[in-house]
Length: 184
Length: 453
Image (cartoon, rainbow over all chains, first blue to last red; front, side):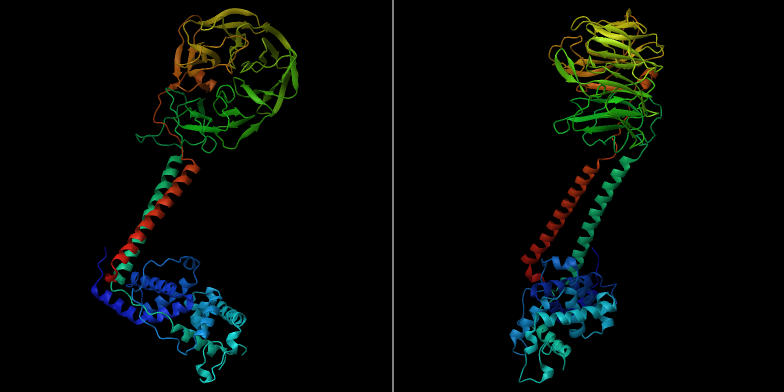
């Protein structure tokens, strides 16, 4: 057994408390499934815990593991969750805009993209990373990110044309949910 | 606002639906413990794999070192005893034994799943290899060892035992090597001959020069079949050929492409004594006679020019031998021969004579290698096979040299690839089961102690 000092454990717990929510949201977008999202986050956190002393930027490392695992062939085929992050699932807020059908449509549309296309879209438009940062995060070339983004957006328009017709007459345009003007 | 901004909003809205989760208090320790377990499992699997490979490679090393740590003695000779190769012994095709002293087989080397299995032992060490044939080719009759022990003839080919892949394909089954090993005599089954109104397989005997890869003589015996067994012998100077056809002994000079017999002698309860029948000086040859079942064997000396009997060369008074086959001659004049002995529970012997041969022998339990002196002296037993080894062939030149070496710890060669594959699969399955058990324990512990998270 390795002796792990209490300081490292406390620092990890602090890191996990701060990052789990964000990681889980990204994982949920990546997988579209609550259990798979938890599994993905658990894997990423476990990797960070295992290499805690060697990792300079745990948050960046956790996200890198999260995204690379999400597009990994082996990962996609491993459906079993070894252990849950928690036994108690706190209540979440209802969909922010009161538009559950839109969220469902977007989630289904994301599910019809390839894992890499999904990861690129989420990094670019959810994490707000540049193309260069996205390429670095996924460990691929810049050209790949550009082409994957282009293909992903085209695919979204194809698989969910109804997103384009969605409009919220009440909210201003800047608050509209996803993919409303796909003909831009 | 464009699609990208809308997508950004949509993704964030969707992300807010993600479930909440908390990290268990002991997550850090458990994650690290699981990583250590994974590393241990991988290291164990790697260790087993390396061990298996090392074992396989170690066993495949040429010049295997014996248990005393000393290299094997290079002197060639007959082993003082034979070991029965285990099921996992390497095949002679994949791991050639080198110059070979003996090939042997029978019930002791075969089983229900390996009916055609027989073995070879090297001349310069106790390296045992096996031949795994679908159908048994009996050593000494259907599988023949060359006089120098360098090659084996079977399945219509002469294959090297020292150079893998080296082979001479032939149109017929080899019935004998010449004493120097340069010629082989094979029998083809071309055509159909008729004997006493009944069709039987055709027999055409050809003498083939292995070095020149050409036939030097052919005998078309359309009237009589080659007697069952090894009724062929070439003289030491490669100029004469003796064939046992039907109930006749025919002698040929190998000076023509299709020689005619220059002497024909009827045989009664008598057989050409084997591939080593010609005496080294070429003046005579011997036949093996047994006047009654269970009676003594006599080696009859016959004139090389006429084939007529000149004397009784040797007589084996008290012998259990059911068949006698002369392989060659030692420098002291003794004939080196194999004698097939009845098994303890053998049925009564078939009658000897022209109607019976080694293929009709039944109940052979073991084979004895003898040095038979001229006259009525007692044969020297050079080797006796274990019970169940009913067929034996010996490299005639090695046997004639009279060198016997003490048997040492046998080397059965590298493990067969199929066995290594099975071992690897078992290791993989075992590793998988172990991993599954470990993971299941972890999951069960986690479920049983939810409060510890």
